[in-house]
Image (cartoon, rainbow, N blue to C red; front, side):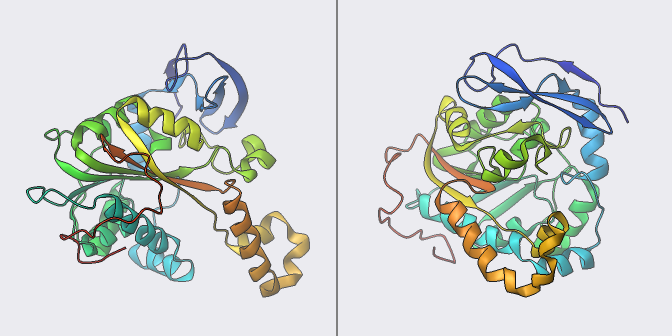
Length: 323
């Protein structure tokens, strides 16, 4: 399956400034040119693969671009390293916080775009949301049905449609980096949200210390699976362009020690002794805003946009859990 790249952006799709070639990444699907905007720093694969190629790619491999895991495999992996469970609780609690207070006539509809194995949809249901999930990968849909008790629709976000103002919240966790047209995705998300609704985006941080060290060899620089490489600055500009104001930014870094041992075999003899120092080091990276992942929460047309994140708000009367 060769990646046929046809469409080329003439300017940065985020801010319309010029760009320069950053790196060329060789893959089994061919070489991908990655360019970087000279103004906002947004980096992206250019030219882009065709939509037909991406549909076939994700239908086969999912958004991880690799293993087709069973329910047992997924649950065992999550038990050993419960990153998805922890991230889901943090992100859903933050969404609930910024939805306070909700209009009494607004149903608690949440759209989980690219729900994967369903850990975020499961937490959203626990928080009292009526969850609608999209997932084009068949293996991930099968697992998500059993984990979250939802039936994901086999659609990409490009093909999804609903009435404007249908959702109080939209979640895009580890998915926007895959989008062929980021403006289409964010403009659609803005239309689908009610006024005051929240869009939560979680994705790899192009401004992370790890990307600075490894450059194009960083694991998340992986076209054609990942086509877009955002920093908080470039993502905030894209959101504002479509009427969404950033309310909060979180940096999150977690590493499996075994993955560190693979990259640095010389320290393997330290075993569990490295666990605590590693966690402290990663926490420091996040405090410096250089973390591996970035989570951004934006609100549509909120009159309170820009209020400091530590400002108290009233509790959400619809939620069964409070943040």
